[in-house]
Amino acid sequence: MTEKDFKMTRKLAEIGRQFQIKGDIYAFSVIKRGNINATFKVTFKDEEGSIESYIFQRINSFVFKSPVEIMENIELVTSFIEKKSLNKPSLRFRHTKEGRNYCYDDESSFWRVMNYIDSVTFDICDDPYIIASTGEAFGEFMMLLSDLDGSKLHETIKDFHNTGKRLDTLYHHEALAPDEILYECRHELRYIHEVGHKARKLSDKFLAGQFPVRVTHNDTKCNNVLFDKDTKRPLVVIDLDTVMPGMAMYDFGDAVRFIANTCHEDEPDVRKVFFDTAKFKAFCKGYLGQAKNFLTKEEIDNLVLATFSITIELAARFLDDYILGDVYFKIDYPGHNLVRTRCQLALAKDIMKKYDMLNDIIQETIR
Image: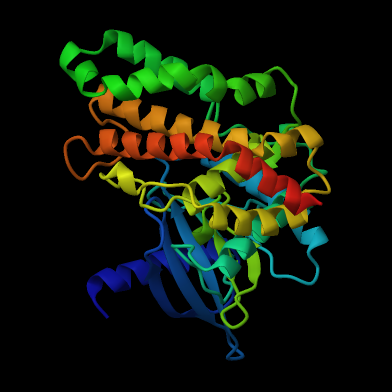
C-alpha cells in the first residue's frame, strides 16, 4: 500500500466511524464518474466476516455553496421515495449519532455516505430501449414525488432555470462588451434576441404562479440513472445535488435536449447538429408512461416549448460566459464557449422546424 493509499484509508475509516459503520475497511477504490465531487467505493468487513460496500463522497463546497441545504433536500426526497418504493432499490444515506446525513472531517471537508447499488450506467444513449428506460426512470422519479410540496425544498442554486433572468444577464453583459467580441457573436446574439420572448415565456409564467411547483431533478442525463446489469431495467435515479423546486417541463426538456442531439454539445460543424425525433419518441414513451397521470394538460402541452426554451437558456449561458472571458465553464481552447453556443442554437432551430411533429408525438404517446 502506498503512503497516499494509507492516508486515504485512515481518512475513510474516520468518516466511517462518524457514520457508525461497523468493522474495518476491507478495500476501497476511486470512482471517476463525475467531475465535481470526490467519490469512493468503500467496502467494510465486520467481526463476523460480513462484507458490505458503501459510496463515500467528499462534496466540492466551492461548487456547492450550501451543502447542508443540499443534504436537507436529499433527506426529504429520499425518505419520501423510499416509503413508496418498497420493492425497488432506493438511495439511503447514513446518519451520524447526532442524526445528520453529513459530517465534517478534521480538515473541514464535507462528507456523506450512501448505500452501494450494484448496477451499470450509460454515458451515451443510442439504444431506444435504454432511452425509453431513462425516460421511465425520470418520469417515475417525478411521479413518486408528485404529492411532495416542492416549495418545501431549498432553492440551492438561485435562478438556476430562470430563463428570463439568464437572458437579461446576457443582454446586460452584451451592452458592456467590447465591439470586437460583439462582432464575433453578432449572429448568435441576433437570433437570441429574436426568440428571447418565446424562450422566457414558461419561466415567466412559472414565477407568476401559473404552473405547479414540482420537485425537479435538474440534471436529467442518462448517466444519472442506475440500471440492472443483466436486464438493463432502470433501478434508481441518482445525483440529487441539484434537486430543487422547479418546473417538470424543464426536467423533460433538458433530458431530450441532451439525448436527442445528434452531436456532442461542442460540435463545431453545426451542419451535423439535428434533433433526433426517434430518440425523442423513445424518451416520451418511457417518461409519459409514468408522468401523464399527474402532469396537468398545460404542462403536457408545453413540453416541446420547454425543450426549446431550455436549449436557448443554455446557449445564452455559454454565450454570456464567452462574452465575460470564459469565467464559469471549463474550456479546452479559445472560442470553445462560442462553439457550444452555436451548437445549442442549431439544435434550437431544428426543434422549431419540427415543433408540430414533436407535439404530435407527445399527443400520440398519451392516448
